[in-house]
Length: 298
Image (cartoon, rainbow, N blue to C red; front, side):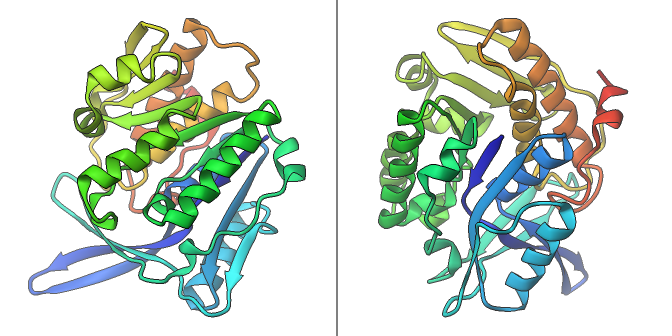
């Protein structure tokens, strides 16, 4: 079983038509996207996060229920609104983000008990909450307790400079989590921000996943590495592609008690196809492929 912890929000995906912009509401939030991907790929998964006591929060809880996720650990905050992410797409389907999250629900995370952690094999920690000092402490406490109980911890960087007071502060904060996690994911751009030297030294003993867009992905582990190709698609919307990739990889690693190069390469191939196919429609979750569709490309 995998536990995903972090933001659940509404992606407001904009479509420009002349001088007007029309927004379509979609369920989102990186760790929630990953939880939905894991569910789609056949994993036993739980999600822990917070929404506001508003129509967006109700929409997200209904969406999670309809998707088959247990909503017991989704907290509804009475005095806060649900976080929003406004997304605009260019002609290639690439995104630009703007978050609406001043005193919103994702700052008020629900407690995670040891009893819940004991039930899972891997804990996935989201990154948006790291912009708040109390939530950093919250994340680090969960990671420490997960390790004390013998669980793996996975972390996707999802680097967002606009929610931190400075780039230096953001990097320092991220490193506190990166250096505690067991599985970490970067995009190509994020590798440039943190530097390959840092990844190859401070994170040498972690399983490092690097998503490379249409070129596929790369794994790095104890000085070894391999690039794994993807499939060719024409993206409509890349929102959530990295989350679908991460979910795909984690779903293949979920039952593995020991890591190996062969396992990594198979997992990344599955993740590459998951991420690529997820770009063929709008939204991070609505177009997640099923296992049989992915297997047709393996």
